[in-house]
Image (tube, rainbow, N blue to C red; front, side, top):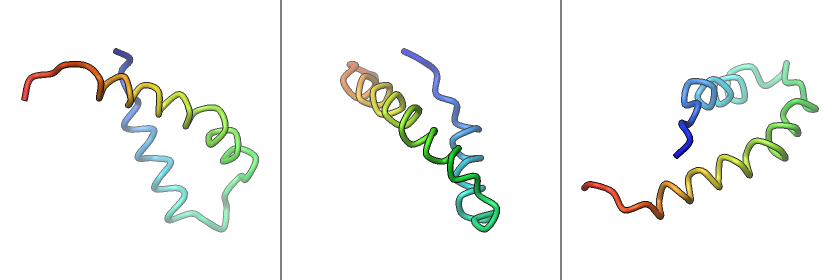
Length: 53
């Protein structure tokens, strides 16, 4: 399973919430169109793996 870049994910959230006026909308679109689908695939594969609970 791929490791998720939690620090980068949280950092993007912080920028989206706290630095909204200075957002680079092209970069936000790139993340939304390229990185979010890959993130979803990784999360879905993680949820499908049998794990220890």
